[in-house]
Amino acid sequence: MSTKRKKFSLLLTSLMALTLLVTACGGNNATNSTNNVSGSKPAESEKPVELIWYTIGAPQKDLDLVMAEFNKYTKEKINATINMKMIDYGDYSQKMQVNAASGEPMDILFTSSWAFDYVQNARKGAFIELDDLLQTHGKDIVATLDPAFLEGSKIDGHNYGVPANKELPALEVYRFNKELLDKYNLDISNVKSFEDLEPLLKTIKENEPDVTPYAMVKDFVPSMPFDYVIEKLPMAVYMDTADYKVVNILETPELKETLKTVRKYYQAGYISPEVATTTSADDLLKSGKWLVDRAASQPFADNQWSVSQGYPIISTPATESIIYNWSVMGSMQAISANTKYPEKAMEFLNLLNTDPKLRNMIDSGIEGVHFEKVGDNVMKNLEKAKNYDMPTFSLGNVLITYLNEGDPENKWDEFKKFNEAGVNAPLLGFNFDTSKVTTELASVQNVKEEYWAALMTGTVDSEEYLLKANEKFKAAGLDKIIEEAQRQVDEWRTLEK
Image (tube, rainbow, N blue to C red; front, side, top):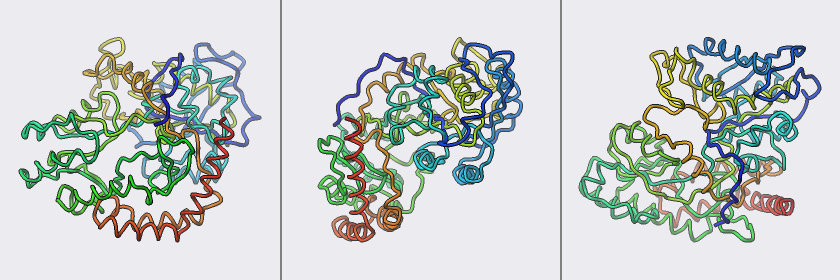
């Protein structure tokens, strides 16, 4: 395992991910902004600016009502108003690609590892480089974020987005239906690995015929000691690598042994026979007819899951707490290459991520209308909150949002400790440029669609099917992709030294 990352004296905040997408060309000449910082008022001679902000999520009924109040505040603070345009989750990536290609006027954009792809669009020139702007107009952001956020989200050595201050590492846990654990007096204290689950799964299978012991879905990938070059494709370096050799995981003993276990569980009936086509375990979780699954965790996640499902859920770690590129890039804001106001856009982002009043207004609405304060840092929703239900993770610094009634007082302190305990993945900060292997990558993706789900969920004989899958992946060009990835990793390491 890579060494524990350094502790930093900078204030560490733990918000859900929001990153600035910034464009690489244009927009740097025309600006009405000054070097105004978040606490000071703009110069009287400065012309007001309207910034267009595209973000992800279902448009809300009271959005215009909230933005009217929001803009009174931003106008006073930085002489700018915000025109927020929301696009629903399923349409966001496609519509934003069209906007970027057509030159649609826009200033600030939500981007991430999973929606309107941050790395891909930064390399296409959709965002401006933010290195200098962060130092001149975003100093408070830099002081607030754990340095791993900005380091891990660099593209070819430069920042093109501002990550949301949130949980930083990824921690996978085995999550359990506590009612079934209690009913059969099952002990999870010794569950450290996938193989350790077997006696618990066996007990439930033998005594609860209507229960699915392991609530698995088709995109399941067993926890193994790899840092993937591209998530869920079979090329990676070992977590404890010394030489940074990119390996084909289909040829590793770790995968072979793990797939034998998955196959054994499938044949024993611990996994649904339809697992290879099951996209969600939500129905199982709602019904309570499951014993265990695997999930990404964060501080107090057990409490949140228990409230959400209506029955007690507890968990135990399945992996170490690891900081990956994709966990750093889970929520970001970028500045568009089409912007006329790059400095003012960064000035707004700086205010958004450091001013609790503004941050909570965009998140929860208008105080006295959508929520009310019941403590210095605690709120409760009012009836009209149903007209303004925004995705907290996509709107900036999560660690300055108000607590909800029932949240532990030390919630954000625990997030900070959680972040400090994270360990850097070996490829943190490396982003594979696929431009030289696009044909091979498309072919490999097609093979994955054919073989991956059945193989990883134990639906087929692992020994026989693994050989066939590996042959297909190689014929599609996997070796060439690995060779190019290795070249880039070696080059990246040279630059990092």
